Length: 139
Image (spheres, rainbow, N blue to C red):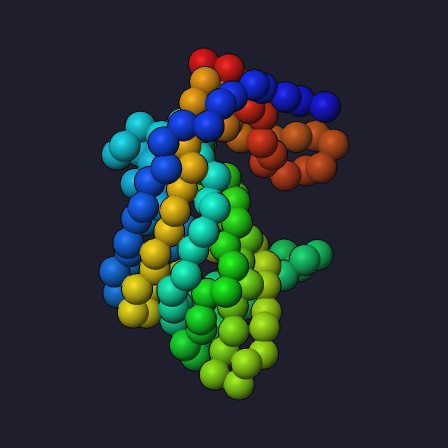
């Protein structure tokens, strides 16, 4: 198990506006503010289009219709974000998966991010999984 100790830091309230990309916007915010470790603790809003990668799939699924963002969870660090979301379309069907670039804010997106002090959330390839994984470090 890889572990780094940290302590809760400040919380940040963010509003993203129509046309912003969820993933790149959040990563850009972290870079501009210098947040080295953050966790999404609340998020509400709407998306459209929305690009998610479902479990076990290598390709994105693009949801073109308006989607309500029901949940968003994940971590943010200097090497990027790892985000998962569940969304609901016009008929109420709920889908969820890994958030990819291409999840565009439709009307608004409100986020609360908890900053974790004393830790940096780095990502690097893990030969055991074949994916870029989290390797937290003290800083």
